[in-house]
Length: 124
Image (cartoon, rainbow, N blue to C red; front, top):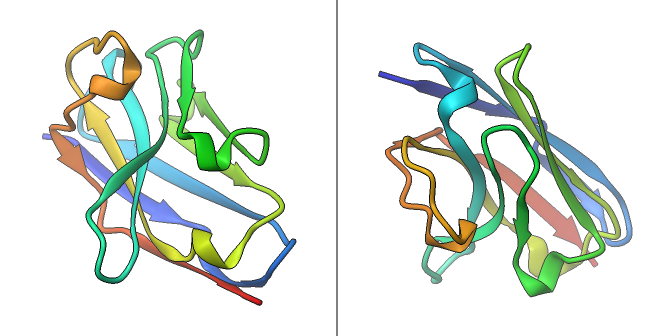
């Protein structure tokens, strides 16, 4: 069983930056495809970014390309989401997720484990 704990959310003005972290425990972290999802009020949860086991492949939804960067440190069992040039429409609860399989493409990842979520609020 894998436990995922997110941190780094908060309130920021439009144009600002935040860095989310997700610490994993209870599994072999380096074997999991990892991703960040988000859910805004009244909307379904959707993928934001994903990263392969060794970090060689990444995926970003079009709306965050050029602004967000996903990375992982397998030695620390942690993934990150650096979010720059934040917009009010980025406001959501952000979830860390782990997939035991090797989805190709990354957009097809189907998480087996989820974190509890961290709130990101971007004011205009």
